[in-house]
Length: 265
Image (cartoon, rainbow, N blue to C red; front, side, top):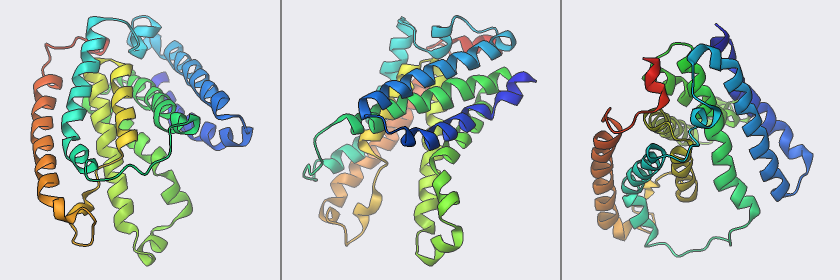
C-alpha cells in the first residue's frame, strides 16, 4: 500500500523542483552540485521507505551504482545497442558541418547532469516503486515511461492547447515528440530492469542528449541532405535491424544478467 501511495511522488517532486530551481539564481556549477545532491538524497528517501516491502540489497546496489562485473557488463551492452541503433544519425552527421558552440557548464547540466537526475527519478525511484507495488517488469517500465513522457512534454499541455497546435500546424510535431519520448523511456526502463545498472541507462541517456532524436526530414526534397538520402537511409536501415537484433540477443537473454529485481518474482 505504501509503495503505491508513493508512486506519484518522484514525478511530483521532479516537476516542483524544476519549477523552483531556476529562481534560485545559482551559478551553473552550483546548480549542477545541487541537482546531484538533491536527487541523491531523494533516492535514499525512497529507498528507506520502500525497503521493507521489496527486500532490496544495500543502497548502492539498489541504485545500480556498484562496481561489479554485472554493472560494467550492463554498461557495455546498453552502450553497444544505442551506438548501433544510432548508426543512421551518425552517418547523417558526417554530412553536416559542426556549427555548435564550445562545450560549457550550462551544456554539461543539460546533457549530463539532467540525465543523472532524470534516470534517478524515473528509472531508479519510479521503476523500483512500481516493482515494490507488485507490478511486473513490463507494467513498471510502461508506467515509468508514461510519467517520464509527461514530465518532458508537460509544457505542451500547460502552455499550448491542442487548438493552437492545430492552428499553427504544430500538432504533428507534438505527437511525434510525445511518441519519441515514450519509446525512448520504455527502452531505458527495460535496460534498467534487465541490467539493474544506473550507469548503463545514464550513459545511454547522455548519448541521446548529445545526438538528439533522429531527424528523418532528410527524405524531403527541400532538405539540405536530400542528395545523400540513400546513404543515410542505408545507415538508418542497418542500425535499426542490427540494433534490434542486439537488443533481443543481449537484453532478452535472462541468463546474461542477474539484477536484484529478479528476486522479486
